[in-house]
Image (cartoon, rainbow, N blue to C red; front, side):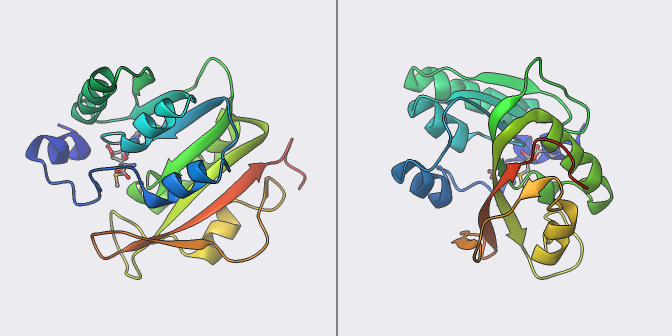
Amino acid sequence: MDHWEEKYRANTIPWDRGGASPALLRWLEADALAHGRILVPGCGRGHEAVELARHGFHVTALDIAPSALRHLEAELAAAGLAAATVCADALAWQPDAPFDAIYEQTCLCALPPGHWPAYEQQLFRWLRPGGHLYALFMQTGRAGGPPFHCEVAEMRALFPATRWTWPEGDAERVDHPNSLFELATVLVRRPADAG
Ligand SMILES: C[S@@+](CC[C@H](N)C(=O)[O-])C[C@H]1O[C@@H](n2cnc3c(N)ncnc32)[C@H](O)[C@@H]1O
């Protein structure tokens, strides 16, 4: 059985906040998210996908763990909301059409760093030109994982300025009950690799 599916079945999921991330709630409250089709890769139990659907987004929620998606589907049904759920490997899946936005909350840090360049390629491919990547970069300050530490300098190299527009200023710190924290930032996919 897949590592992640095993964790969900055993309910050993310390990353799960039990509700939507405060970062997403702040972005929603500020009406800062681009409306339209949004993908949530590595959605887990999908609290953020539910919140996005509640706010009228056309949500596709993807995860490799079927149990996590079953939980999300039950939550959606209980709330009378709709979202597409996809059980697939984020490194292989391709959508029929590109997305307007992606909400990337700790799928990257779940992948071994050797897979990060392939995942960046996927994010670039999944988004339409000008599409927004709402990213939460996990900060553990330690070697090993998952979760793997997403050092900002390393993220800038992974998401190069030739392919992604970075905002001015520092990323916003988002605390996590598991005592780690994430850095929230919004990247914009450039039309093509300008490198
Ligand atoms: C740290 S958890 C975060 C879950 C959720 N985003 C959250 O914040 O609660 C990482 C998630 O990524 C999923 N995942 C890991 N590798 C994946 C892959 N290759 N393709 C799709 N999902 C994957 C896991 O099943 C897990 O739900």
